[in-house]
Image 1 (cartoon, rainbow over the protein chains, first blue to last red):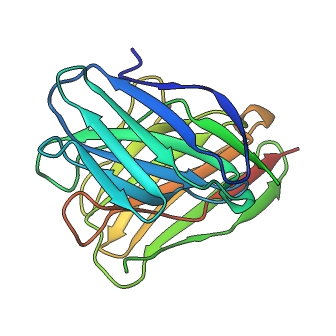
Image 2: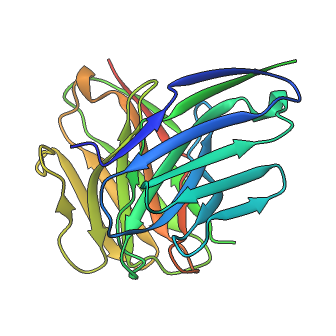
Image 3: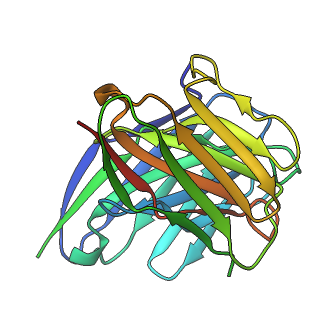
Length: 114
Length: 115
């Protein structure tokens, strides 16, 4: 059972454009929603994360929008740069303990054309 | 910030041999370590969760006798792929809960190729 669904699978955007990636989850117990950036041959790196008590979080060019009632959250990359070309994963976890596992979305390959 | 050092970054081995992958938490104590497997162009699949001083918990469908996990100390967790076969070729990644609430730090990954 895929608990976190991510779309699109791939995305091409021009330099300076906006990249938008969407995720939907099923488990209402999830209370932590991070986004990870992964370059080929490397481990994922945390980009930005949000909890359900806020509807939006912005860090630099990256913004998470969160809709609790719809059980959806999205990542917006503003002013996309070629260096942003990578695979992005949304994820979710539940509970307050640090040992709870992450459930990942399927990933989105983003290509930013110069 | 919290750093997880994973070694080796890549390894090539012959079928039937065993390979050990190490993950060390460098500046914090990791009582828990998650081990993932990632096939090309796919997402991360959780294989098992290791806990210091106790047996690892394996996800459904993961052979515990093939993927041996040891978490002997608060800073070291190892994954040993026993009797490796070409279908075990994959990218293996470890992850530990970080020092802040719900933070997870990932290792740099190990590319395993079995020939």
